[in-house]
Amino acid sequence: MGRLAAASLAGTAIEFFDFFVYGTAAALVLGPLFFPTFSPLAGTLAAFGTFAVGFLARPLGSVLFGHVGDRHGRRPVMLASLLLTGCATVAVGCVPSYATLGITAPVLLLVLRFLQGLGLGGEWGGAVLLTAEHAPERRRALWASFPQIGPAVGFLLANGVMLALSAALTDAQFRAWGWRVPFWAAGVLAAGGLLLRSSLAETPQFRELSEAGRRASAPLTEVARDHWRLVLLTAGALAVGYAVFYTVSTWALTYGTERLGVDRTVMLACVMAAVAVKGAVTPFVAMLGDRHGRRPLCLAGCAASALWAFPMVGLLHTGRPSLMFLGFLGSLLAFITMFAVVAAYLPELYEPRVRCTGAAVGYNLAGVLGGALTPIAATALSEGGSGPPWGVAAYLTVVALVSLGCFALLPETLPDAVRSEAPRTAPA
Image (cartoon, rainbow, N blue to C red; front, side, top):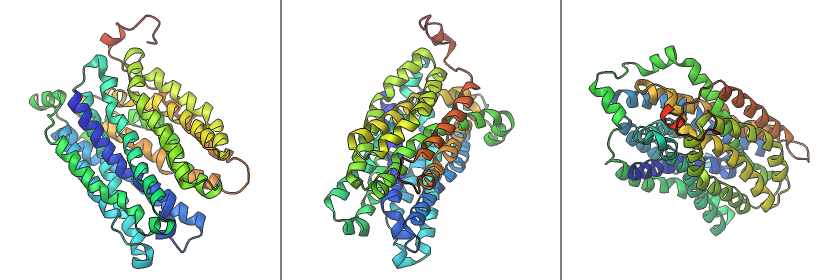
């Protein structure tokens, strides 16, 4: 289990490094480089538009790779998705700017971002299922939480490289070539991840399905016919997590640097510190999920996200590093209260024969609902006025309440054998 967890964590870290480095670049430099004929606001919105394309591609990736995972195994998904995302990311770093290629430059950026999202759409299902289906049921949430630490590691790597380059280079150097370095580094990381994953074994549950001849012939058709309500509920339930995370990690960078005049390195450092704490507490929250159930933690995380939205925006608007960090940390702790157990929760909601497709589609559809439009909506809502952008806080609160309602309609999945061993005071 340790080797499986390490390989899953490393792979998701690499793939999310690829995905997040684009988000940071979109917040800091892509607007003027690829959309120079736009106004500063329109350029930022256009850059976030290409950012959103990655989320739109993720459900398609979950359908494509979900079919592979349910028909041919979880292991091939982990290898193919990592290869696709890594190649697309390296290519982004090679695309000339608008000044060289004209309109072709942003079009290429759009296509490569789509391929990034396609690969990431398959990554989560493969990595989570390979870990969750090997894990003992009494520790399933704990072991399955390791792929969920990967996004935090990937974010820290992506922004750590961006922070170092931003601090070491002049603004002109950073805009000319410095921002491309993290994209080129993705190739080395992807090669290492493929080497680590190549020796992993297929999951026992998929081998049993295969030997019994019970693999789904058309996984997407079964999911659409028999589990459509579950897919919609899980997508709605997880939308708040994406909205919160990308408000903090992407929109806040733009708002802090452009509207508040906070130094770019200071903003990156504040967000990175909060993400580091979030990553560190993930397995401990997951252990609570193994003890008290998945659903209670998800409900608590949604409620906390709704309650903290206005304080977070108010603390961000101060422009003071310590207070901005506090605002970001509160939001990300609410986020991880849900997402630490999701890697165990979603697979348990779906039957094994369509699990890779169903869980991945629900998870990535939530990315469209909560992540794709959030930086765009937040940028539009924060435009104009000198006070805190309370419209952003209201937006997050509404999304959190919708997700809370969806979680309330989902069942608990903590295995009966584990539930019977839990203390009598624990939630059912």
